[in-house]
Each structure stands twice: as structure tokens, then as C-alpha cells.
Length: 430
Image 1: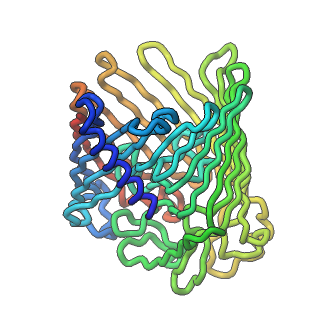
Image 2: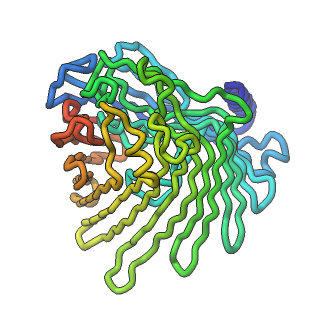
Image 3: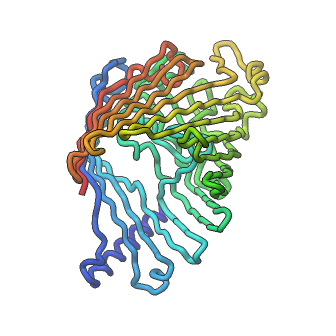
């Protein structure tokens, strides 16, 4: 990407210029080194490795610099931020992998406007691991194998403008380069493939076609948000593409693509009177632009989605959170009529509950938690227990597990039964 090269040059020039100033003004390097291992407990012998799905050593480098060599840079509070990982991935047997997770320039040209341009993590919405109006890319492979939660979010090449006002603020985002979700492809995580009618691994054959980088394919998103009487509200709009490949170009050859998508949504969250705690509600219309009111069986149908959540802290550093998530297919009759022999039929309504329990011990240096996904429709479950220990300001240890349960191979969580694992992450931060 040209923007990446430009920002790297600016960062290098800023650092070089900084060496002529006082040493205290030179950007300080932060980050961590980490080793991760994830051992599989249900070996399905479908992925590339049978005994484990994560074995890697990672070093992250983070640099934040505020150039002031030019008066306008200082006046605009200009910031250059760079964060990258160097990864030795023993699973893929790739000796080194280098890739910026964030590389952007941010500045404030006027008091009510903030601008950020470059590779950045974008996120909004109220859900905990559930995303309705957050249509920015995710890495679900990292989520499934037990990497740190930070790696669930993928960066986007984007320009973002935030306009701040007394009553409300407005975020405007333009994304010229499409970035899809990183979903299982069978090499590391096995998954259900409707073309085969079963769970597949390395033998699966899918060809994913992404929208090309053209002006007319630029994704745009907007969020109008504010606070009223301790309640945070937001309105959302997104015009772009599904981040999962939910459309077929050619069903026989397994060629999939990312159909056009418009999202219209809203959310509100705030304190609950009398009983206490924080509640949230979020909803969104995901309008599939190519499904022709569900007459096209090869494209995802439009849906209405709803999320209700509640979270409350108790004495002795104990917290409970729960969510109810519902997806309603909008043109179900037309969808059923479009199916042919051999097609699997989705439910008109999909429901999912989540429960999160968190307890802190030893002066808040030990965190024990469990996050549970459960669907009463598919009768499948995903358990994410973890225990973390912050031994010092620098050293931390996390042990946990990803456990998938379910009798249906084509359900959201049941398809991943063969990928359940126990993992451990040891990190030194500097």
C-alpha cells in the first residue's frame, strides 16, 4: 500500500530528526515478547497438524511519536503511531512474519475535528464478542485457537474523521481497500463445508474472490453518538461488503465472494435504576444488496439482528455479564422456496445466549474468568475459561481453553469440536 510506505518514511524521518533534539524527546519503544502453545484435545485429523493448533513466538514493537519540527505539526497535535509483530509460527513452519498491525498519522486541524489516516483498528458497538454494527474485519482463527483478545480485531486501511459537538459527535470512515474476516480454511482449523456436506480440513477446496480496490468499491461507515442523562446512544450506517464469504459465484467449483451489504443500526447503554449494573441494547438491519429478497439461494438473505446485555459488579471483585442475541431472516418464505434438493435449510430465527463470570484475586493480580456461548436453536456451546496471573509489571501468564460442544456438524460451534484446545501464553512486556 502506498499509504504504508509514506507513513513509514514519515516515521523514519521524524525519528532521525528527533535524534538532533534532546534525548528525552526521542520516541520510546514499547511492546512485548511472548511464547504461545495450544494443544488440541479432540483430534479430528483433518487440519495440517493433529496434536496442536498454536505454537509460536511473537515480539511486538510499538512506537508513538509527536513530531514538532514544523510549527503546523505541533499546532495540530500530530501523532505518528506504529505497531508491528514479528512472528515465528511453528505451525505453518514459516520462519518469520512481519506485518504492521497499526501504522497511522493522526492530527487535529481544528478544535472540533480529529483525523486519522492509515492502518488502524476500527471498532464500535456495545456487544461483548458479538458484533452487529461493527462491520470491521475480525480474525476468528486467532479467537478460536486462543491468541490474546487484541488479535480478534484486524486492522483496516482507512481514513477517519471525528467531528465533536456539545450534543453529539460524528465519526466518518472511508475504507478504500477491502479486508475480509480471517475465517477457518481447514489448514489450521477444520470447519463445516456445505459443498462437501461435512466438516473438512486440508481437503476442503474454497476459492475466495474479494472486491478489487476501485473507487466505486470504497466502503464507508458513519456513527452519530452522544450521551444523555448517563445513557450513551449511537446511530450507525455502513455501506460495504459482508466480511465473511457468504455468496457463491460458482457452487460446483467452490468459488465464493463477499456480497454487498448495507447496515442501519442503533444502540443505547447505561445504568439500570434500582437494581444497578449496566444494560445495553443494540439492533441493526443487515440489508443484503444482492439477495433479491431471498430469491437468490446463492447469496445471504437480509436479516434483522438484536442484542440485549447486562453487566454488574459485586463485592470482592466479582462481575457477571449476560447477553441475548437474536437474528431474524427477513424473507424466509422466499428463501425456502428458492432451495433445491441437497441444500441445508437455515432457521428463520437464530438465538444465542452468552454468560461471562470474572473474579479477581491476590490484589487483582489473578483473573479467573469463563465466557460461555450457548444456542438453544442449534444446541451447541462454546466455553472459554481462562486464568491469568500478572506476576510483575513485566511478566504475565495466561492459561485457558477453547471447548466446543454440539451434535450438529453444521452449527456455529458444533463444527469446531475437533479444534478444542488447552493453551498457555507467557509474556514479558517492556
